[in-house]
Amino acid sequence: MFDDLFEFIQRQYPAEAPVALHRPLLGELEKQYLAECIDSTFVSSVGPDIAEFEQGICELTDHRYAIATVNGTAALQLGLTLSGVDAGSEVIIQPFTFVATANAIRYCGANPVFVDIESRNLGICPQKLRQWLLDNVEVQQGVCVNKTSNRRVVACLCMHTFGHPSRMDELLAVCQEFGVLLLEDGAEALGSRYRGEHVGHHGDWMAISFNGNKIITTGGGGALLSNDESWAQRAKHLGSTAKTPHPWETSHDQLGFNFRLPNINAALGRAQLQRFQAILADKRQLARQYQQCLQGSGLEFVLEPDACESNYWLNAVLCRDQKQRDHLLQLGGEQQLQLRPAWTLLHRLPMYRDCLRGDLATAEAMAMRLVNLPSSARAGVLDA
Ligand SMILES: Cc1ncc(COP(=O)(O)O)c(C=O)c1O
Image 1 (cartoon, rainbow, N blue to C red):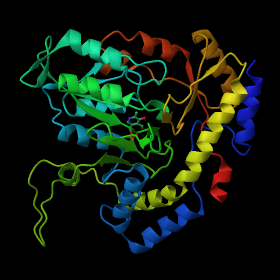
Image 2 (tube, rainbow, N blue to C red; image 1 turned 180 degrees about the vertical axis):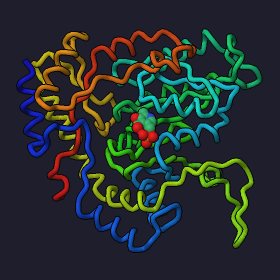
Image 3 (spheres, rainbow, N blue to C red; image 1 turned 30 degrees about the vertical axis):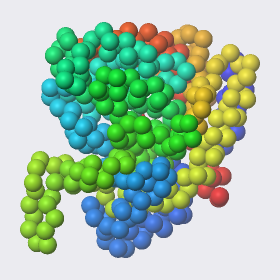
Image 4 (cartoon, rainbow, N blue to C red; image 1 turned 90 degrees about the vertical axis):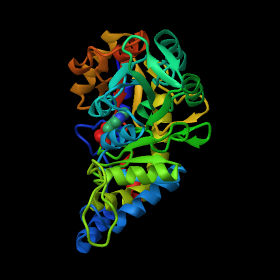
């Protein structure tokens, strides 16, 4: 029934069994940079690769500042802390996301509030966001307050699902109407463009992830992106144990985090950045080929949204219903293909079951029907 699809996938990854959902592409360049880093002995929290890696991310994303962190979750927590998210506050997110989006909010002592996604881009829906705010908040002297919980609604942390940009112009307009910050969880979206511009320029900041399953990797790692100099300095300071600069004293002026990306991870990242355009081009080609292969299959390929260029981090199809989804997952597993259903919706997890939420009908429907397909860049990219 899905024979053409399975055969197509196997042809893309002839050396892999089982075929992974997403694996990193690592070659001689990565080995060389890591060996040089080891020889230098700068393998830990200081070293020249960090600044070079941060500069490379800035060039790739057109941001003025990048602060490399130990992982994407830490980048989110650091950004949220600097945005004033604390124990008395709420942050609006979609329930259709990896758990880290909500965890980072909880690490700040704050409360996630769930608003529905739209089917077109699987990102938070601007209309539903506006409706939830209209129904639930009042703006008191410029501060957005939830009428039921009496807590401050500080931000909407949108997420670019599988690399597909959310509707940023509309989200920003809604957030501005209610005095709520717009922030971006772009963990999956390095290289994705919205109306010609790299994502991450609508929100106050954007977090990205360099986990091993992302489009490029530093082993573990992440970054915060910003265009605001003083904000970036504060982020660097708070993420580096808030150590005060001094020639010999070790002193700290506030409770900081040790969230710095080690130099050895940055060295790996520098090699990966050199391959980035080749990887991105290959992933976009793979998405076009999936689209062609799926024509007439009864499975609906999730396309990049209008006026956007997605990095197609993870390709996805929508099945007719849950029964067809389970059938696809079952048969794919038998063929040694790592297919994956959507994340369990966050409001169904025990730690987020009691969170406030709007109507989540689209997220529920999409979660029942969606399957992610193997999406690694193909091995030939290493020869480019
Ligand atoms: C949407 C989203 N947010 C946050 C993260 C967290 O990133 P990390 O695993 O680097 O902590 C990930 C991925 O891992 C993610 O997919």
